[in-house]
Amino acid sequence: MRMKIEDLNWIGHAGFLIRDSGKNIYMDPFMIDGVEDKADIVFITHPHFDHLNQDDLKRIVTDKTTVIVPKSCAAEIKKGKVYPVEPNKEYEVEGIKFRTVPAYNVVSERLDKHPRTNNWVGYIADISGTKIYHPGDTDFIPEMNGLQTDIALLPMSGTYTMDVNEAIEAAKAIKAGKVIPMHYKMVLGEENSRLAEKLFKEKVKNSVFLKEIIPAKYSFQ
Image (cartoon, rainbow, N blue to C red; front, side, top):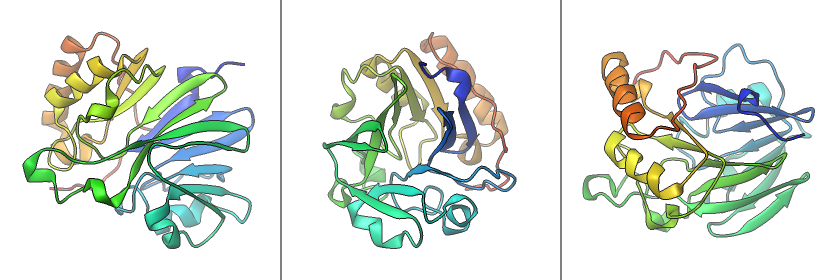
């Protein structure tokens, strides 16, 4: 059965939980107090604490969990079956096909945040026939042009990733069926978040704003 958008749960920040065909699939889980579902698969985009968080992984990772992680930070995974990956590759794990997309900054003031040379990644995962793109922390990069995914999860906070206007341009380039903003509330603050939502909805007609399962209390300010 094809995955529905209702099966995609925004934990908060850049973290998502997908419940599909009896499996719990996490992407960049962070601040997941209260989520008790053990993970079958975890996708990690890069080692920053709000994407690879040891306390959160302890809550959900078992010895049977497959943890998909960039090769450059695979040693940081302490439990589970570690599956290291590199950019621009195709893989299949436990019946789920996915490919990796580079994730990096191109804007001058952000170049030190996510350098391309680190080989960090985003993922396009085919989950029950629905292709979901989680780009990790990145700017609008050339590799996004024409990806044509069903769902694109786009950061739009600025500072560490593309900002709202850059995310809008990325959304148009990717040509996704649905675009879901992420990675913004804890950085922008509530008032700026509402303005960002308004702008995104006006410019990207297929945008969907999810409600967090656990609204994160942490602030980057």
